Image 1 (cartoon, rainbow, N blue to C red):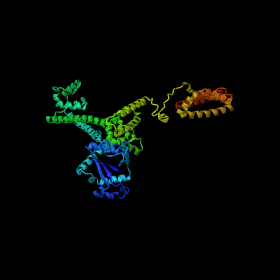
Image 2: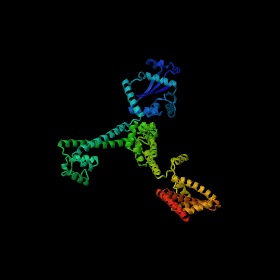
Image 3: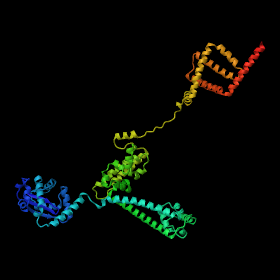
Length: 563
């Protein structure tokens, strides 16, 4: 029986001298306590040394996956016969050797114990290899194998992106502070220049070339400004209301301008570097959300692998954690987006569709981050990101047009979409539904409750007058004739005549429709309202009293003359 032993230095094949001792596995370690004892059980047959670390790494990687490498094939082909049985540590490797060379392979618990004992005495069993070389080769293989397992690549370092986006934000703050200080400082000497030039870099470059405002006539600013702005600057310099400053002051201002220009140039180069690193590390995420938003997501998560492990809902709210917990604490509406709000797709969407668009985009970013982090393609592959981007743009166009009828292929999703979709119906005005008298009456009653009370009061008066007409109609007629002499008697006569007509109408069988009755009631209410207005006037009451006194005096004179 032969034993295949893999080391960092190469492949070793041992021959088992006493197979009977392998049956008792518990006492096997006692035979390997000394080099003399272990040489009685196993003996080195052949050792194949690796040429360099790359060959060692290739063989180790193939052994991990249970495959045969070229060096192992050469060793087995030259030193193992088909009649021999080979003991291996990995059963997958044994199956591959059996299929390739038709050699019976053994892999059991006893084989693992025997290999462990051989490893303990490997330095004594292996002849011709120094201990220093063995340790150096094992150390180099350990480093290279760890890099291979982690798929280490200098192009896949996302730590550089995290540092670059942090520095980019800090540079933006510093440039803004310097420019504000420069505008305030130079504004004492030439305040009109700040209103003419709104662009910060143009303002700084103009100060650097101009210096004192008195030099504006002799200096050409065409390389910095347009002709119109140059004329405005020169005219404003002649009539400027700024104060005079010394040469030392202008020198420090120019030095500050140099610092601002240097920082802005470095900021532009850093931005280009960030774009290239994002396209190398996370190309699909960059296609979907852009380099700046993608870099801020990596910085927020810590690494690309952490972002790939996040669900889509966490990616959607990444950067809005304070707002989320504030909303949960105060029981308000939770936010719909975080850093993803600054992407181009969410920015192009309308306010009504922004929340839905951010949710769809976060789902696609989660897929793209997983593909970028765990994908095995060595070259930059952006097919997934471009396909997702085209799909999202198409859905955005459908949502804005209002013609998006289904989100997924199932009818259940379509029903959910229609449930929350607002259905607006156009209601037309129908002229046939116009109400006539009844609606006016109700409107008047609703608007003015006093009219309702007056109507009830006049109805009670009419009922009393009807009863009086039934009892003594002749006396009422005589009273009416006597009251026609004054001004107010005409109004009271109209009221009594109206009540008599109403009583006659009530006694006779009514053949008119309800509509005519309603018209008569409305007219009656209007006449009663006019009467109340005429009665409530105080001047007319005085006249009424005077007329009554004159009537009484005339009647007394007539009676005396008649006597």
